Image 1 (spheres, helix red, strand yellow):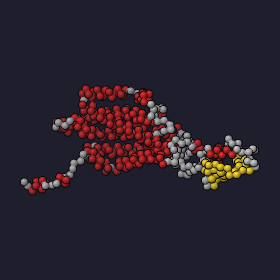
Image 2: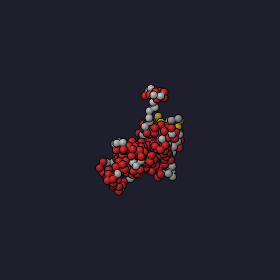
Image 3: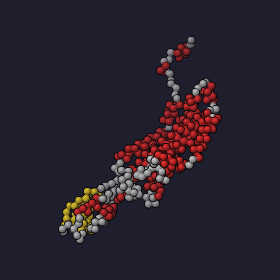
Image 4: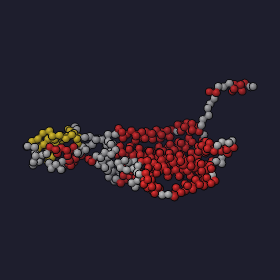
Amino acid sequence: MSNATADAAIIPARDLEKGRSLWSDAMRRLRANKAAVAAIFTLALMALACVIGPMISPHPFDKVYQSYVKARPSLEPYPTAEQIQDDLERALRRARVTIDSFSVEGDTLAVTLSADEKIDPRMTRYIDRVDAFANARITGEENDGRILHIEADVARTLFLAGTDQNGRDLLTRILIGGRVSLAIGLLATFVALLIGVAWGAVAGYAGGRIDQLMMRFVDVLYSLPFIFFVIMLVVFFGRNFILMFIAVGAVEWLDMARIVRGQTLSIKRQEYVEAARALGVSQWHIIWRHIVPNALGPVVIYMTLLVPKVILLESFLSFLGLGVQEPMTSWGVLISEGARNIQDAPYLLIYPSIFLAITLLCLNFIGDGLRDALDPKDR
């Protein structure tokens, strides 16, 4: 035995370099892609904001501020000086009193009212009903109650992204809508990926009558109108969030199955697949270890396109009254509402569109990173 052979024989097993699997090698390559890592971090941060943001927001997503309908985004709290006067006049219009004077010092409003007859003390309720004021109380009266001095607290409210056409905080509704859009987009895409990859890989690898039977079933599902399919689900299961997930996910896997089948027909004729078959490797093992990993490149690219497609489908269904219902919302619904108010309130369209655009941009970077990481030709 030579010295080199003897030295190799005594190397401890723990010092030998372990082989890397496709998935571990893909993760290493993905971490090296800075754009993909930054996109994953941004998307995770946005998802975290959509989950936690509504919990810490001072505005419930369904609360209506009648005094702040289409209030523009501002870093200064509402109400403004002009709004205080308008809201006060609107609040006391039914009380049939005259506003002699009013002043604002800090967060306290002082008002002097007069009338031809004694003023009912309960008229302070009119002031409390306005969103801009709270805790209205009588501090003095003159002329047998015909003149009242009233004080009220000015309720300062901050709307960083403004309010919608119903007076609801837009930022909170964007975060709530992000929950729905991201959940439907990601979960429906995951279902389409799971069913489509399995169906297409089995059909393409099996071939023959099995392939013909499986793909004819796909053609039958293609022939069913999507809206008709959704209406049937609504009739049988009712209108809810899970229905959206089932309806979209149960249809969008068809394209995925055809893509994977086409890739499988090409891959199963490669030398390494023939070698695995000659060595007696089981068909399921060949599909999982050789067919599916080598077909993931186009699948990942299509998956990044499927998420925005699902979000738009959800918006379309909600517009028809078959999807998300008020007071719940989604990015698609918010963008649709913003488009109808673009002339007098363009921010209603801009802010939800920014969130959606950032999400789509992150998905594109993630898709490019996954494609490069999972491409066996670049290993």
